[in-house]
Length: 304
Image (cartoon, rainbow, N blue to C red; front, side, top):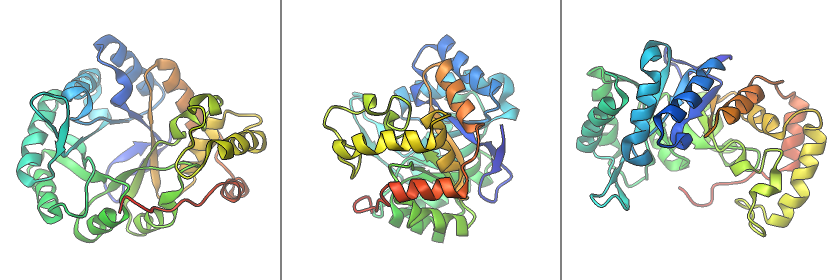
């Protein structure tokens, strides 16, 4: 599998990353899914301290322990569970991040994290303090690089101005083209990579299409009726001889700002299917333009 440089860093990530949130809580099964990804050439594994109260990090760390020096482990911080574990609060403070990283390191069975990400963020955060925490962790050797996981254009702009982030994880797909107007050109201009998630739009951009939509429910600014009209035409014109999810993933990879599509998988079969799609044929300029002519250039109205 091809790799792309992560920002201006010395990290090179596989064009497909494994989003580990869907691994479940059974160690044997999680290891099988991770090993399938490794077999396909995936070297980027994305987790968070929030997933399964930290158990996800433990499973990822155990599954990757024997190949630690060959993979890029990414995790996230900023959300802290309450004592009852029935909710969490947002805490991007320096004190919390510097404590959270130590707990993540223990769970991941490693002494460094390749990419440490802020798991959200608002414009009201103490952004300078948060950046200071990440910079100190980098100097201290606990992390190699840092980034944010956010779709908020105003927050992204602040981190571009004030920090040394190498990446931004954000939702991006054929049905969610919101990043194209504000975020992607700006990030590409500054040499910051996008880690794209949600590329198949909750399964709508797979061969199952409307099976994945609740009856009468749309997606973002698409109504159910619009999806019913659009998806079969997309498949007919662009995916007649290949799976629709291949078109969806290749659409993201066609944007020069995108380093990797981070795909979730709960089974070995899903890993292989996604890897096959990423290793498939790249879209031509005409195909990209056709997709853009058929879909909405969505805009960020909220999430500022």
